[in-house]
Image 1 (spheres, rainbow, N blue to C red):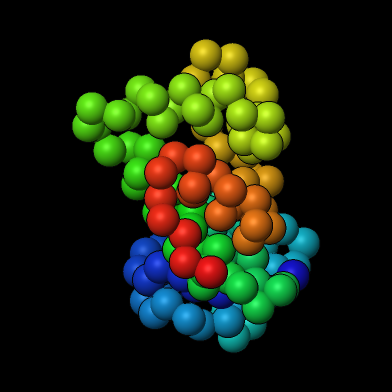
Image 2 (cartoon, rainbow, N blue to C red):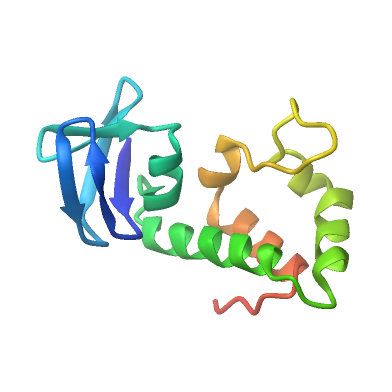
Length: 133
C-alpha cells in the first residue's frame, strides 16, 4: 500500500535517524513503512499514525490534514469541548473508529487513520469544522 508523509518525520526510525519532509511517497510491506528501501516504522505504530497517511487513492495529504484537524479540534478545551465529544460518542459512523477495548475512553483505531475522505469530512463537519470541497 502507498503512504505519504503528511507531517514531517524527524525521529529515530527502524533504519536509524531520519528527517523526511511532508509530501514524500512511501510504501508499506508486511506491516512496515519504507522510504527508498529503508524501513521507517511499523504501519500501526504511533509514528506511522502521526506522520504518514494512506495514499493508495492519491488523497493522502488531504487524509492527513483532515485527521490532524479533527484531532486538534476535539482536543481544544473551550466551552464546546464536551458538546463535540458527545456528538462523536453518539454517532454511529464514529463508533466504527473507536477502539473497542476502551469502554470509557475514546482512542481512535487504525480504521480512522485509513478512513475514506468522505467519512473524515463527515466527522469534521460533525464537530464543527468547515470542510472545503
